Length: 99
Image (cartoon, rainbow, N blue to C red; front, top):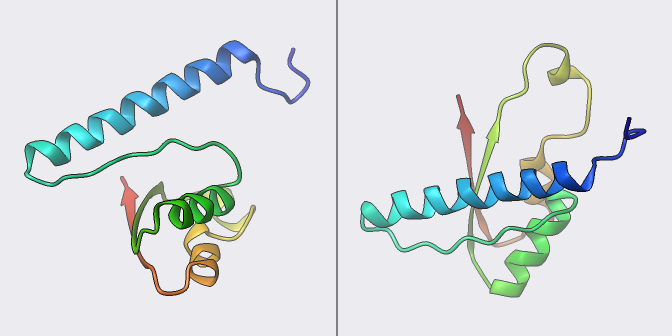
């Protein structure tokens, strides 16, 4: 039992999966003639994205997410794009909903 905490092995596996998915996405964009760089950051999503955007001096961000369904749609935190809209003045935010 992990007592609500993720084991180190699980965290490492989640990180490896995230890195693989990011690489696949960048490779796919490259095959379609789009230059892209990816950055993997862990933490509270709005904080991590805001910090990375400032660090890179970027003016465009694309955020992918899965739409919440059922009870999860009503229970939980605010949608990420609303927090980003408040924090990232002047940046264009594109949200992509995965099916």
